[in-house]
Length: 44
Ligand SMILES: [Zn+2]
Image 1 (cartoon, helix red, strand yellow):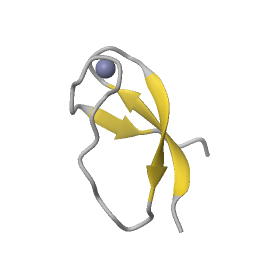
Image 2: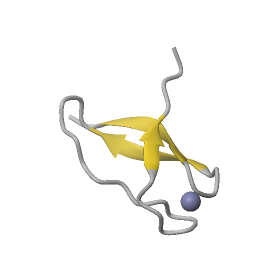
Image 3: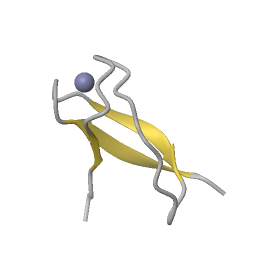
């Protein structure tokens, strides 16, 4: 069951929610600029 996690683009600084499956590393692409320099943000 996927949950949503907040991601942040290192290139343009956009923040967005994407489905995230714990334990699974997937390459993410920024929906704003297309960069794959995307990091998951930890809210804790
Ligand atoms: Zn971006």
